[in-house]
Length: 177
Image (cartoon, rainbow, N blue to C red):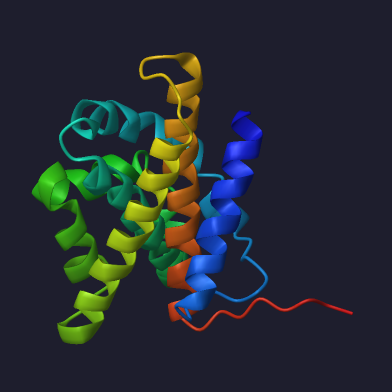
């Protein structure tokens, strides 16, 4: 069930990003960024669990923003940023959990004006879609299955944020013949 849910979620987010012009038909692979998920997920999870009941789409969206930030770090200077001991805490502690989104958009991605607003809408739309899928999975709250599905949501949003930012930076995913 968990693997099926995560695959379904991945496919849905990928299709949505493509429909918005924010991803190529081939979902990007960036092992450097993907390999940071376990570290990031483990440090993000306590905040995510604590805030989810009151702010579910914000929590989900923050995972998208962290993925965007990590893709930006990879693009800029992975030698430096790839060696951070705790990338999530680095991002969170700049302005606090509540303002993580603004910090990433303003100070990491350096977005202003319409680009700033578009990033906010994209993250919000992806988070809302994911939350809807989680609700429609009809999992009993507090069960191991519900927890695993929640972690899958965070993971797939992290990857979606990474994919969107790589696309925005001009990376194209093409099949080699």
